[in-house]
Amino acid sequence: MKKFLVYIITFIMFTGIISSVSFGKSVPSMTDTANHWAREAIQNAVHEGWVNGYEDGSFKPDHTVTRAEFIKLVRAALNLSNITSDFITDASKYYRNNIKLNGIANHWVNKQGWINSSVAFGLIEPTDYQNNDFGPDTPITRREIVVILDRALGLVQAAEAEKGIKLPFSDDASTPSWSKGYIHQGVKKGFINGYPDGTFKQGQPATRAEAVLMIQKALKIMRQGIDTEYKLFVNNEEIVLSAPIQIIDGMAFVPVRDIIASQNPTMELIWNPVEQCLSFNWEVYFKLRPESTSYEYNGLYPIEFTVNTRMLNGEIMFPLGNMYEGYYYGGLWNAQWNKENKTIHISITQPSRPNAS
Image 1 (tube, helix red, strand yellow):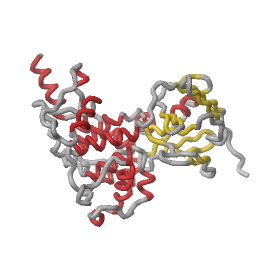
Image 2 (cartoon, rainbow, N blue to C red; image 1 turned 180 degrees about the vertical axis):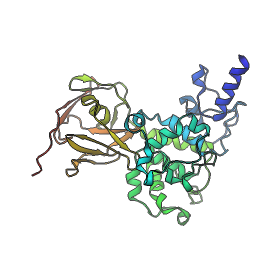
Image 3 (cartoon, rainbow, N blue to C red; image 1 turned 180 degrees about the horizontal axis):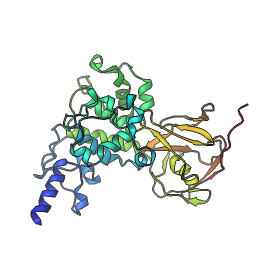
Image 4 (cartoon, rainbow, N blue to C red; image 1 turned 90 degrees about the vertical axis):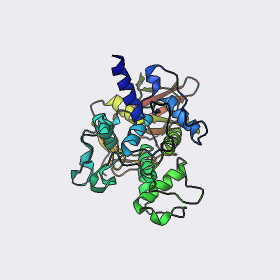
């Protein structure tokens, strides 16, 4: 029995993902990170439970990380909600000719379930790879990491709008045009930078330390303003949240999917992983996106926000004002925010189809 447990623990540590916290142990100090530039980020990641070291007590911060290892890391770290299982069952329908990701059938990253959820949400797409072959044991590049983290933060529309933008790096010419918007967004958000020599090295394999630091920075951006003490009530009923409420610069952000589902739990909510778009038909057709200042109402009536929507744990976070009685969903709800009691009350009326005239 003891040998069996040793084997299991060794396997888990080798994959470099599952935290020792799950075994009830204190967070270990890695033997080879004491003087490393990413020491603090590595220790924080180990403490949070989404990365671990090796059996010999080392972390090997300057070793490369494979695509499979990174996708497991980022999925564990970002704590995506059940958006994938609730919204769609087969993401391939969103890709040209229903193509699917190849090269993963017998790989551990697929057998453990990390691939399906990542494709369903849109962290990775079959068209990202030559012949749609994921190549799970291929070292992941800096460019690939930026694209994945942009998608996790809901930055697809912004990145696609900047396709081909000139980057402020001396090796800009060697960067694929389609990826430049993603790199620009990553640099703009601050989770990645270039090198002191003025290059970005988009095709260079990332090290374990670099991967951990980039994920840590993306998490900081995503988790800004989280306040788990807040409660959300819809039509006087408290609802269970898929993502916690965020308070940022005097604005409250709430998970819009939970609000909709609380009033119509059987309604089909559709998540498009390529366009990063949530759509549903509630008498009228709605389409919402992360990092957007508006949403489509019946395909014709854009409703404007004062700030961008956000993405948290795979959920689109809807902005509310301090005491807002407005026209979200075309005048269908009003929201009241009590800062002292840390509660938000939203009243919703059943929508009716607008007159075509």
